[in-house]
Amino acid sequence: MIWILIAVGALIVVAAIVGAVALTTGRRRNRGPSATLPPVDISPYDVDQPPAEGATAVALEEAPQAPPAPTLERPEPVAGRMQRLRARLARSGTIGQTILSILSRGDLKEEDWEEIEETLLLADVGIGPTTELMDHLRTETKVLGTTDAQAVRGVLRAELLKLVDPTMDRTLHLEPSLGDDGQPHPATVLVVGVNGTGKTTTVGKLARVLVADDHDVVLGAADTFRAAAADQLSTWGSRVGVTVVRSEREGADPAAVAFDAVKHGREVGADVVMVDTAGRLQNKAGLMDELGKIKRVMSREAPVREVLLVLDATTGQNGMRQAQVFAEVVDVTGIVLTKLDGTAKGGIVVAVQRELGVPVKFVGLGEGPDDLAPFVPEEFVDALLS
Image (tube, rainbow, N blue to C red; front, side, top):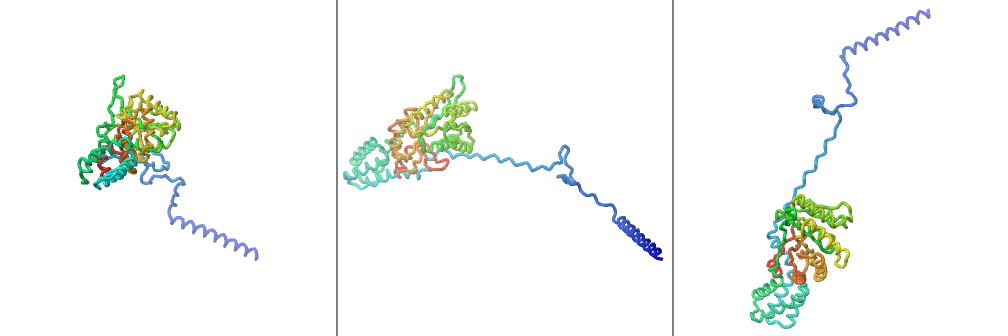
């Protein structure tokens, strides 16, 4: 009997298993075909947009955008710059204002004339020019016999203008010359000066002056003692599209860099090649000799048309000895006076021209890139008396 019950139970279990299998099979038939899973490595392309022929199915990063070409600056026209900067130049005008106020007092006593003389000397006009101006002022005021401010101002203006000397040639000579091969050479300009006068900045500003006058310019970074000087010059050049020839090796021979700059200027047909040099103290004989070497080496490729000496107007008479030594070594042809807007020593214009017989050709009247102006004697004197 027990065996019969075991057999019946086994049959019931088997029947239950068979029924469950049948039920599961029926449910699968009702669901339809199973979905296909996507592959693990998914294509970066849209399924509905197959890749173009020859394209690879590798996920690509978006190509970096090339930086836009820098917009070149157009320097301010040179004509009229000094007129625009006249208000700044008037900061040197204490010389004229003080003298005018003294002269307009009328019956001048000896102490008044001494005050005028002191004013001229403090403005760094120099002893010789001061004596001349004093003699002429004494004579003219006696002849006129007037205390009228406008009449006195006219006398003073005429005398100051004589001292500044409007007859001096202040042209920047950039006419091309022909070489032995009959090919035109670029005009070459050598810029020299002591440390701290703002020489490299002046070269950059002069480049803008030349570009404003439609010259094709090449700059030479022959200040190889300071890597920052070459970088600074390259920045100035890039802003107006001017090529800068430099050495990547600090301490390279500056004469070689100057030579390469002139050579490159000839090869590309530039109008002007301007070479910046390292600042040097006038009492360092070795450095001054090096300056002479730079000029000689440049001359092998093209004659040096201009040697511009950069002087800091705020140094006054201290700059005179500097000017004398530089003039002896490299035959200075023109002066660039920087920082003239920040000093009451505007008389240095008179003193340096008298001492060297060389004209002031440009004056720096501010920190802006176009705050360098050709020197105009009449406007300078009028600013002193404004």
